[in-house]
Length: 376
Image (cartoon, rainbow, N blue to C red):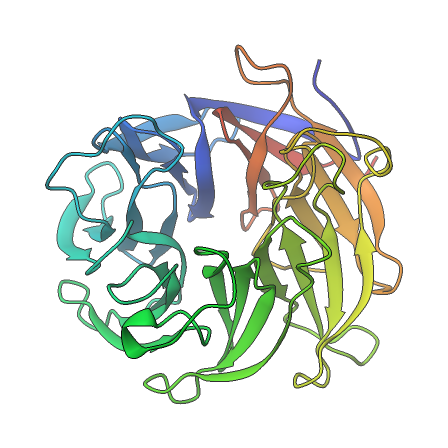
């Protein structure tokens, strides 16, 4: 039975599970985890009665589980799905698709861009002009950072790339890690910097003042001793107590039941060349006991509107963590949704907030719950 503290349910969207949800101008866009479902466009202007406006599909063995919208332009990723036992079509090549969504009920494809190797595009950020992508490319091991220019959305073009030394095997580099353990997972832009979770390579800060020549600024890698990979490095767009901070979410995968479950880190980046971990947070009751993967942390809300940061915490549902004192993060509200049909526990995968302050909690398996803070 769904329950919460400081949060109440407003509505529910009955759709297949997904990897990402965003909401712009009363329209929700959901990237789904598994084909044949690709992307859903949903009218949430009345959050108590959401209505699906359009859907896009994907071939077997692939997915388009990430989506971004700016103005009338929607970008979705195209990627082979390593969690799907079905083989992708022989002619499938990963990358991304660009759509005109000026009429959300009738998305119109205007461009298709393919990577020159590997699975395709995983996660990405988009500011209306540039997209910052985690992409595979021939000659590299694992995903690298790719910067694409969308000045002409029908003809996107690469303007820059960055990779961790050791990834460019075609250039003679040799990784010091196994397989693709060090790879770009999720770049986010703030100002002239990219903040990127780099999987089991920790996180990195990249200077993109000159986008054609991205430069490494700094980073921290806590693998080992920790096992769970670094998923998202979220910059806080305002000072807290006169200092600058970064919130890093590790993803609760790639571990044994006796390993610590993934949690959140708070990093002081006031001196960005020397980032310093100042605290961490884990949901009470997880630490110190065996737990299966997908129990702990996954993804923060990327729209930061205050020191209260909503998190999709996999089996722990929605957790709102206040970092107003960065050295002592504190949980101030939570919501535990019902498990998806046929599941024994929740799998909260993504969370976003709209301009009305409504929260959208996306389950990895099925459904979106629409919530609001209950200040009563």
